[in-house]
Length: 234
Image 1 (cartoon, rainbow, N blue to C red):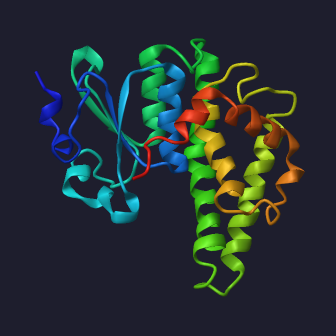
Image 2 (tube, one colour):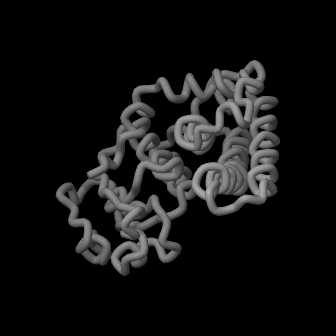
Image 3 (cartoon, rainbow, N blue to C red):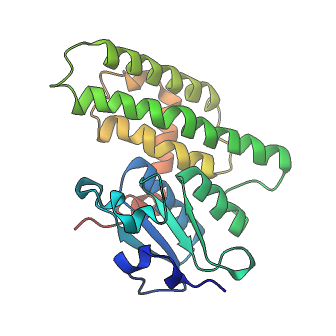
Protein backbone atom coordinates (compact mmCIF):
# COMPACT_ATOMS: atom_id res chain seq x y z
CA UNK A 1 0.00 0.00 0.00
CA UNK A 2 1.34 3.40 -0.97
CA UNK A 3 2.31 5.79 1.82
CA UNK A 4 2.52 9.58 1.97
CA UNK A 5 6.29 9.27 2.30
CA UNK A 6 6.36 7.59 -1.12
CA UNK A 7 5.73 10.99 -2.72
CA UNK A 8 9.13 12.67 -3.32
CA UNK A 9 7.63 16.13 -2.77
CA UNK A 10 7.31 15.34 0.94
CA UNK A 11 11.10 15.36 1.26
CA UNK A 12 11.21 19.03 0.21
CA UNK A 13 8.03 19.94 2.11
CA UNK A 14 7.76 17.48 5.05
CA UNK A 15 4.33 16.74 6.47
CA UNK A 16 3.83 17.46 10.16
CA UNK A 17 0.17 16.35 9.88
CA UNK A 18 0.47 13.21 7.72
CA UNK A 19 -3.20 12.30 8.05
CA UNK A 20 -4.32 15.68 6.64
CA UNK A 21 -4.55 16.75 3.02
CA UNK A 22 -1.24 18.24 1.95
CA UNK A 23 -1.66 21.48 -0.01
CA UNK A 24 1.22 22.89 -2.06
CA UNK A 25 0.31 26.37 -3.15
CA UNK A 26 0.76 30.12 -3.27
CA UNK A 27 -1.88 32.82 -2.81
CA UNK A 28 -2.71 33.42 -6.48
CA UNK A 29 -6.27 33.27 -7.88
CA UNK A 30 -5.72 29.62 -8.77
CA UNK A 31 -4.05 28.84 -5.47
CA UNK A 32 -6.68 30.33 -3.18
CA UNK A 33 -9.46 28.40 -4.91
CA UNK A 34 -8.28 25.26 -3.14
CA UNK A 35 -7.60 26.80 0.26
CA UNK A 36 -11.04 28.46 0.19
CA UNK A 37 -12.69 25.16 -0.75
CA UNK A 38 -10.85 23.31 2.01
CA UNK A 39 -11.99 25.93 4.50
CA UNK A 40 -15.59 25.74 3.27
CA UNK A 41 -15.57 21.96 3.50
CA UNK A 42 -13.92 21.83 6.92
CA UNK A 43 -11.39 19.25 5.77
CA UNK A 44 -8.16 18.99 7.76
CA UNK A 45 -5.21 20.14 5.67
CA UNK A 46 -1.64 21.28 5.94
CA UNK A 47 -0.52 24.13 3.69
CA UNK A 48 3.00 24.31 2.24
CA UNK A 49 4.23 27.53 0.67
CA UNK A 50 5.55 27.10 -2.87
CA UNK A 51 7.41 30.32 -3.57
CA UNK A 52 6.69 30.81 -7.25
CA UNK A 53 8.81 33.97 -7.30
CA UNK A 54 11.79 31.78 -6.42
CA UNK A 55 10.81 29.01 -8.88
CA UNK A 56 9.99 26.42 -6.22
CA UNK A 57 7.43 25.05 -8.69
CA UNK A 58 10.21 24.19 -11.12
CA UNK A 59 12.15 22.01 -8.70
CA UNK A 60 12.32 18.26 -9.17
CA UNK A 61 10.45 17.81 -5.89
CA UNK A 62 7.44 19.80 -7.05
CA UNK A 63 7.54 18.42 -10.59
CA UNK A 64 7.32 14.91 -9.14
CA UNK A 65 3.75 15.77 -8.12
CA UNK A 66 2.82 18.18 -10.90
CA UNK A 67 4.87 17.70 -14.06
CA UNK A 68 3.31 20.89 -15.42
CA UNK A 69 5.09 22.94 -12.75
CA UNK A 70 2.11 25.01 -11.64
CA UNK A 71 0.41 25.55 -8.29
CA UNK A 72 -1.76 24.35 -6.66
CA UNK A 73 -1.32 20.63 -6.08
CA UNK A 74 -2.45 18.35 -3.29
CA UNK A 75 -1.89 14.93 -1.81
CA UNK A 76 -4.85 13.35 -0.06
CA UNK A 77 -3.50 10.59 2.20
CA UNK A 78 -7.03 9.16 2.39
CA UNK A 79 -7.92 9.00 -1.27
CA UNK A 80 -10.12 6.52 -3.12
CA UNK A 81 -9.96 3.09 -1.52
CA UNK A 82 -7.95 4.54 1.36
CA UNK A 83 -4.91 4.99 -0.87
CA UNK A 84 -3.02 8.30 -1.06
CA UNK A 85 -3.63 10.26 -4.25
CA UNK A 86 -1.81 13.25 -5.71
CA UNK A 87 -3.64 15.78 -7.85
CA UNK A 88 -2.87 18.94 -9.78
CA UNK A 89 -5.01 21.43 -11.78
CA UNK A 90 -7.23 23.56 -9.56
CA UNK A 91 -10.46 22.63 -11.34
CA UNK A 92 -9.79 18.92 -10.94
CA UNK A 93 -8.92 19.46 -7.28
CA UNK A 94 -12.14 21.39 -6.64
CA UNK A 95 -14.21 18.67 -8.27
CA UNK A 96 -12.37 15.95 -6.33
CA UNK A 97 -12.88 17.67 -2.98
CA UNK A 98 -16.56 18.31 -3.70
CA UNK A 99 -17.15 14.69 -4.70
CA UNK A 100 -15.16 13.41 -1.73
CA UNK A 101 -17.38 15.30 0.72
CA UNK A 102 -20.67 15.48 -1.16
CA UNK A 103 -20.66 19.26 -0.70
CA UNK A 104 -20.35 22.32 -2.95
CA UNK A 105 -21.57 20.30 -5.93
CA UNK A 106 -25.25 19.47 -6.45
CA UNK A 107 -26.24 15.82 -6.28
CA UNK A 108 -28.88 16.18 -8.98
CA UNK A 109 -27.19 15.05 -12.23
CA UNK A 110 -28.45 17.95 -14.33
CA UNK A 111 -27.45 20.59 -11.80
CA UNK A 112 -24.15 18.84 -11.19
CA UNK A 113 -23.09 19.07 -14.83
CA UNK A 114 -24.45 22.62 -15.05
CA UNK A 115 -22.18 23.55 -12.16
CA UNK A 116 -19.19 21.87 -13.75
CA UNK A 117 -19.71 23.71 -17.02
CA UNK A 118 -19.12 26.98 -15.15
CA UNK A 119 -15.99 25.54 -13.55
CA UNK A 120 -14.72 24.70 -17.04
CA UNK A 121 -15.77 28.16 -18.23
CA UNK A 122 -13.35 29.54 -15.67
CA UNK A 123 -10.60 27.09 -16.50
CA UNK A 124 -10.80 27.55 -20.25
CA UNK A 125 -11.79 31.20 -20.50
CA UNK A 126 -11.77 33.44 -17.44
CA UNK A 127 -8.45 32.31 -15.98
CA UNK A 128 -6.37 32.36 -19.17
CA UNK A 129 -7.89 35.56 -20.56
CA UNK A 130 -7.85 37.53 -17.32
CA UNK A 131 -4.31 36.33 -16.75
CA UNK A 132 -3.16 37.50 -20.19
CA UNK A 133 -4.86 40.84 -19.67
CA UNK A 134 -3.16 41.31 -16.32
CA UNK A 135 0.22 40.36 -17.75
CA UNK A 136 0.15 42.97 -20.50
CA UNK A 137 -1.73 45.63 -18.52
CA UNK A 138 0.37 45.52 -15.36
CA UNK A 139 3.53 43.49 -15.76
CA UNK A 140 4.55 44.15 -19.37
CA UNK A 141 3.35 47.75 -19.59
CA UNK A 142 6.93 49.03 -19.79
CA UNK A 143 8.02 46.31 -22.24
CA UNK A 144 5.27 46.22 -24.86
CA UNK A 145 4.41 49.60 -26.33
CA UNK A 146 1.88 48.25 -28.82
CA UNK A 147 -1.61 48.74 -27.27
CA UNK A 148 -3.01 45.73 -29.13
CA UNK A 149 -2.46 43.06 -26.40
CA UNK A 150 -4.14 45.15 -23.69
CA UNK A 151 -7.01 46.00 -26.03
CA UNK A 152 -7.47 42.42 -27.16
CA UNK A 153 -7.40 40.81 -23.73
CA UNK A 154 -9.23 43.72 -22.11
CA UNK A 155 -12.07 43.36 -24.60
CA UNK A 156 -12.18 39.63 -24.00
CA UNK A 157 -12.18 40.15 -20.22
CA UNK A 158 -15.15 42.48 -20.55
CA UNK A 159 -16.94 39.98 -22.80
CA UNK A 160 -16.47 37.25 -20.21
CA UNK A 161 -17.66 39.60 -17.47
CA UNK A 162 -20.78 40.26 -19.53
CA UNK A 163 -21.44 36.50 -19.64
CA UNK A 164 -21.22 36.43 -15.85
CA UNK A 165 -23.38 39.55 -15.57
CA UNK A 166 -26.15 37.85 -17.56
CA UNK A 167 -25.86 34.67 -15.54
CA UNK A 168 -25.98 36.46 -12.19
CA UNK A 169 -29.05 38.54 -12.92
CA UNK A 170 -31.50 37.73 -10.09
CA UNK A 171 -29.17 35.02 -8.77
CA UNK A 172 -27.35 34.99 -5.44
CA UNK A 173 -24.65 32.64 -6.70
CA UNK A 174 -23.81 30.93 -9.98
CA UNK A 175 -26.22 28.11 -9.14
CA UNK A 176 -29.06 30.24 -7.79
CA UNK A 177 -29.05 30.05 -3.97
CA UNK A 178 -26.46 27.25 -3.85
CA UNK A 179 -22.84 28.25 -3.25
CA UNK A 180 -20.72 25.80 -5.23
CA UNK A 181 -17.27 25.15 -6.63
CA UNK A 182 -18.34 27.22 -9.65
CA UNK A 183 -18.34 30.33 -7.45
CA UNK A 184 -15.05 29.34 -5.83
CA UNK A 185 -13.44 28.78 -9.23
CA UNK A 186 -14.58 32.12 -10.60
CA UNK A 187 -14.61 34.81 -7.96
CA UNK A 188 -10.88 34.90 -7.10
CA UNK A 189 -10.18 35.78 -10.73
CA UNK A 190 -12.79 38.56 -10.77
CA UNK A 191 -11.38 39.82 -7.48
CA UNK A 192 -7.88 40.09 -8.93
CA UNK A 193 -8.95 42.46 -11.72
CA UNK A 194 -9.24 45.27 -9.20
CA UNK A 195 -7.23 44.26 -6.15
CA UNK A 196 -4.14 42.97 -7.96
CA UNK A 197 -4.21 44.22 -11.56
CA UNK A 198 -5.68 47.57 -10.45
CA UNK A 199 -7.80 47.69 -13.60
CA UNK A 200 -11.15 48.67 -12.10
CA UNK A 201 -11.45 51.86 -14.11
CA UNK A 202 -9.82 50.51 -17.26
CA UNK A 203 -12.27 47.61 -17.47
CA UNK A 204 -15.18 49.73 -16.19
CA UNK A 205 -16.14 47.14 -13.61
CA UNK A 206 -18.98 49.31 -12.35
CA UNK A 207 -20.82 48.41 -15.55
CA UNK A 208 -21.22 44.88 -14.16
CA UNK A 209 -23.27 45.49 -10.97
CA UNK A 210 -24.57 41.92 -10.62
CA UNK A 211 -21.01 40.58 -10.85
CA UNK A 212 -19.71 43.08 -8.33
CA UNK A 213 -22.52 42.32 -5.85
CA UNK A 214 -21.88 38.57 -6.24
CA UNK A 215 -18.15 39.14 -5.74
CA UNK A 216 -18.84 40.95 -2.48
CA UNK A 217 -21.02 38.06 -1.28
CA UNK A 218 -18.33 35.51 -2.10
CA UNK A 219 -15.52 37.55 -0.57
CA UNK A 220 -17.40 38.16 2.66
CA UNK A 221 -17.69 34.47 3.51
CA UNK A 222 -15.47 33.48 6.47
CA UNK A 223 -13.85 30.67 4.49
CA UNK A 224 -12.87 33.15 1.78
CA UNK A 225 -11.34 35.56 4.27
CA UNK A 226 -9.20 32.77 5.69
CA UNK A 227 -8.41 31.10 2.38
CA UNK A 228 -7.05 34.31 0.83
CA UNK A 229 -4.19 34.19 3.35
CA UNK A 230 -3.18 30.55 2.82
CA UNK A 231 -0.44 29.57 2.49
CA UNK A 232 1.00 32.35 4.58
CA UNK A 233 3.89 34.14 2.92
CA UNK A 234 7.36 34.05 4.46
